Length: 162
Image (tube, rainbow, N blue to C red; front, side, top):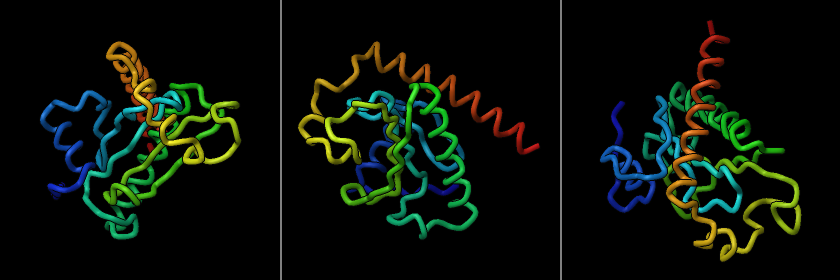
């Protein structure tokens, strides 16, 4: 697939780091996107699914690619749910800051915020605090856990398709 990169796009920059082998948060490559652990982990297991195509809107993606992208996102979310023992998943495709299509997948648990609601109600200073960055050892363990679970989810999906 032809992946167009944009110099001023943070998501494209992160994808280039994956290609260069320098993105420490990279977990797996799927046909339509890249799975990465979020930099900050207030919501343990927070994961992103970065679209391989640089588009600003989901509906701009070609139909077949978009359907596969949505399917793969749901499989990544299932793996996040299982790997990090979520009680509920939040799925968000916003694009107000980084316009490149990408999913935020938040495993939620009771009491993870003081007021029930969207993750974005949490104070940004709390959510993006450096205290929420995993240590290299924690990050490595999270990546291994998610990758192993994703492998199982993908295998089950492939078997169900046959």
